[in-house]
Image (tube, rainbow, N blue to C red; front, top):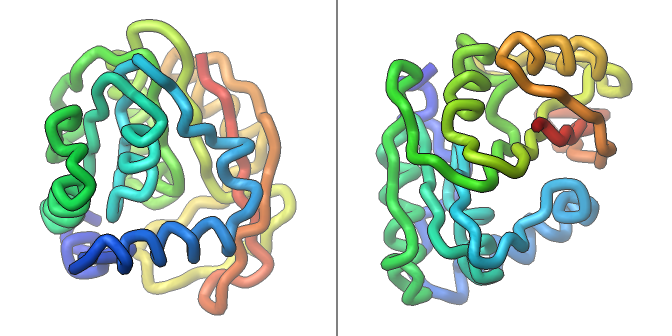
Length: 203
């Protein structure tokens, strides 16, 4: 899976602030319910963006006043894109990149954010355990495909899971989390028809 994400970037790089802002606006237009279910306003808190991709949420956490954001990914290209993007906004000093490996502990934080990642990993329980160890207090917010109401399609991504809400809460419990389903939003695309994303609060 690491090789796949090295070769297939979710977005970026962005050469200018205008390109970066356009990408944020496009994402907001595609997923208007995203930030109601996966908030990014955690002022004065330490945040872990687990699977940061091109850094959309990392950037927004910092804009909303997070004290520190650790942006983590299995792809060094994603980390580089996010690093360069934050430099453009003058936000780099309050952030730290982390190359993900499931056998290592991550810094302690007060909030963990993981959007669109776990349904594509080889070992989701190990990933959840890693998040659990990093969470000092507060909660983790996790988004995965909603297996209850989505068409279970397959793309070029080698692994795609479609957990039902009950299945995901059981999965989270294996890592020591108490899971609560908080809602879903539409996330369909040409390669992912009739798809919805389910969001969970994990404590």
